[in-house]
Each structure stands twice: as C-alpha cells, then as structure tokens.
Image (tube, rainbow, N blue to C red; front, side):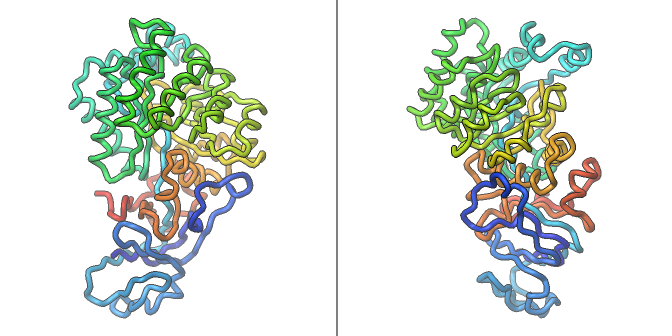
Length: 424
C-alpha cells in the first residue's frame, strides 16, 4: 500500500461510471485541496482531505477513511509526503505513430524551404520514405528504436497510449510492425492499444485499387494482433468509398474503427467514421458544421492533434466550437517522424490552451479522460476514481493545474506512477 499525503491539489476527480466529458462537462473536474490518496494493488483505493485522516503522524495513522485500508505502524506500506505538490491522472495519448525507423529530418528542411506536406508526399517522401526505411530495418532494431520513444513518453507522464502500424504498406511489413507494437505492450507498465493502419498510403508497386484490396486481404491476420482498424481518409489518400470498404472488412474481423479524417481537406471521413461506429475520428483540422452535426449523439470521440497543426503550420481544430455544440474533445500527440515529432502530452495540453483557447480544466479532460475514452480505456484509467489504475502524476511543490500549460517548458514532474508503481 502507498499513502500519498499532504497533496496540495488532487485534480481530475471523476465519479465512477463517467467515461467521457462532453459540452459544459468539459469545464468541470473534481478538486480536493490538502488531500491524501491511497494506492493498493496498483489501483486507487481511496482519497480525501488531510483533515479527515485519523492522525497525521506516520506512527499514529490507524484507518484510511473511505477505503478498506487499515494502516498499522510498521506494516508493509509506504508513505510519500507530497509536500504540497499536485496529483493528477497520467496523460493518455490516443493517437501515435511511434513505431518507425530512422528519421525524416531532411524533410524538416523541405518544410522550412516552403514545401507542403502534400508536395513532399508527391515527391516520394513522407509516409513512403518511412516505409522504405522500415522495410530495411530488422524487427529487433525496430523494437529498440521504438522503445526509446516509449520510455521518453512515459517519463514525461504518459500512462496509456495507442500505437499504429502504417509504415509497412505491404503484408509482411505491416505484420512486422504489429508484432513490434505487441512486444512493446508486453514490455512496459503503460497501457498500450494497437491499431492496424494498413491504409496509411498506397504501398509502392500497387495500384490504388490493388492496394485497397491488399489491405482488405491483410485484415484477418492483422486482427490477430490489433485492437482497432484505421484509414487515412483524406484528399490524395483514401476515399470515403475505400474507407467504407476497409472498415466493413475490419468489422467482420472484430476491429472497431479509429479514423484519420479532415487533416488536409473536408474529406467525409467524419461521416463514414460515425456510420461505422468509430471510437474516434482524429485530426479534424478542417471541419465544417456538417461534421459537428454528424458527431452529435454518437459514441465517437472527436480527437484533435495540435502538435501536427503546430509543426505543419495548418489550422488548429475548432475545439471550442465542438464543445459549445455539446460535444467532447480529446487531444493527442500524433507523434510521428514527419508531421509531429513529439510525444510530450504536457506540450499538447499547452497548445490546447494557448492556440485552441481551452481552459486548463478543459485541456486536462481532453488529455486524460477523453483521450482514454478514445482508446476504450476510460473505465480503467484517465481520472482520479476509486478502483481505476493508479496512473498518476505527482508534481514538485507549488504547482497548480494552470501552471502546467502556462510554464510549459519548466520541469514539473516529481514522480510518475503507472499501475501504482513509481517509474524509475
């Protein structure tokens, strides 16, 4: 058992059974000042105000109210003095492409020199460049390179993440990617969800129609390793008709959709995603009122990727308008080598505030509970709720929720807990 005491602010408290925040709820979260929290068996066992503890001296604590925990002096327990630090849920990152080989820093120079994402792709760069590098990289080396990024993300406070394939673009290399992601899931204390994104671009040597059929044919084997299926439904990549066909094949194999939509153009991806019961539709840098209407009343989480907007210089998602229309919003990193080479979810939260004009509470809900929902994990993690995994961030003393995005480059983390254990 671990008792964290003298918490300055315990933020992100959500009642049991609440799986996402929508509309006005996005601006709400439970907060306790001068609080304690107990971790047992890797889960949150209880929390409350310090004034309600029976005794404040470690040798005098006898009962933790609101839990089944008796604190017996000298028993197998650990007491951590937060010294006024803030405790909040660990970040949840529902959209990443962190299994890739090498680097695309040469394209960074192309962007500086004025080439667009579409122009780089048309020259054989972009996703196809990553595909070529991945093909030449062994499975073990791909795993080692990717684990560097996973460890970086966990150290910066991410406790749950989704990882996509999509740089293989042929049956053998797509399955290689999925095996590497499965190996990562088995190696780390963070929660990992796996998405088959065979339809990320047209693989080399294929016609458009031939590759769509190849993705459909890959589906049964991919479904043995993946949790979700994704399609890059956007201008210059896959059409609504392609997407409909691929998602139908995915559903037949038990894979729920998570869709790339509306990054480069208003593509119809939101609508086809909602039609197929997508867990999330992601990017949404270019949307109109029709997309908002399509999402009303659905179980689909609109997910915006401000790191991609920042890096590419494209519009930021209309998060405040979505929230004003009664929808929820999740924010994720889009960590990938070409358009968002960062998995720092604290920076994503800061962009949500600075560039998308979300309040710190709205942004926190977007990078914790709602992003967990976008991975099907919000019943397990993403909030301070008794019975959920103890995926927690403990800051240095004096931090508040507002300071985290405001002082967005100042070190703030004292300890990251994943599954109740401090990350070393």
